[in-house]
Image (cartoon, rainbow, N blue to C red; front, side, top):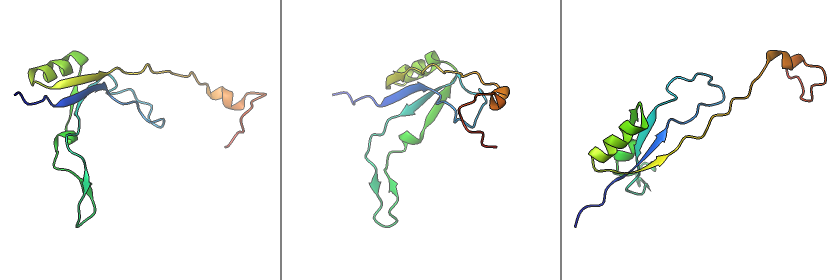
Length: 107
């Protein structure tokens, strides 16, 4: 009987936090291994961990096709998470001083 294939997740890089405005490394695709063991607390220290080190590995690729090719070449079962479309709200500095503004000015 053949061993089950290890499952990996292929996704686009996560969106930036609201305090980060740069768009660098936005088009990358990440391959992450799914956990195969449950995490358990260590009886001595109380830290949570497992013997599975694969879930610490994150591989980055320029394109989705490269990530899929890597998974197929290494015999990995994969799931692809499509990126959500980014919405950009246009803002203007002049709106901070607009007449009839409904929000409080906090400066």
